[in-house]
Image 1 (tube, helix red, strand yellow):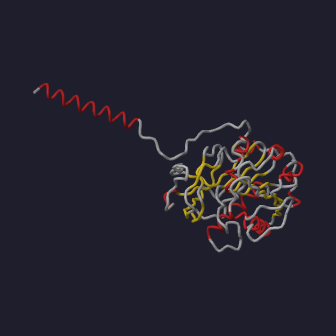
Image 2: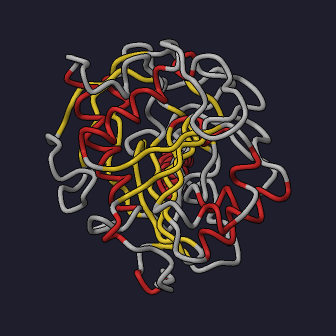
Length: 314
């Protein structure tokens, strides 16, 4: 009997030890968040000391931006057909995103030139004519060597950059550009579906006029790497996505913190980023959709702050 009691006590003790060990090493979350903190060899983050105020821009002449939509891979429907060479070539009604950004500029007081011509990006002196450069749903290797170098020199001279939607599916093999996006890149997305966007702060120019939460329909990009050293401005609540967050290539989503907009100082310049912007009416200021209207407030504030016309990355 004494031996039996000893066996029972020993088994209980072993179970307690095993349980304690299991509690000490819980099963890791399947959400993809801790995906590295890469170093791109530049000053980057939320410290304004990373900005180069070298006198290259004169806001007394107004805000002027360059919209770049060249695709070297998949092309989003809201971009319409590829544009002819040159600056400000003719648009069709199908070029909904370009027309929308132009209309937003007219509404909110900034001038928009647009192009898909690499020659327009080949010289930093040409880019310095603009307070910000917007990459809207560009794709794959959309820059040649001259344009890569020019963009880098422009940013180092204090230029503004705005990356929208598939700007994250661009220049995968150009590490400096990945850093410009906040140390993040597109991996995959789930179905095009409505979710609830949560505004994280109203201090920033991009989010000042947004509600604390709002509905929006998008593809909800999953990212690798995960943004780092940035100021997060908005997230999507994955629990509100009816078809879930798992992407087409198996990315499980980012769990309880899935960012959709952020900002940073980067290598001398300012960079505002959002993964949203898939919808056909996303950029149309006449859209009656409340989600479109809030998205437009977000990107207009981001454009003007990246251009230096409003406080940046607050």
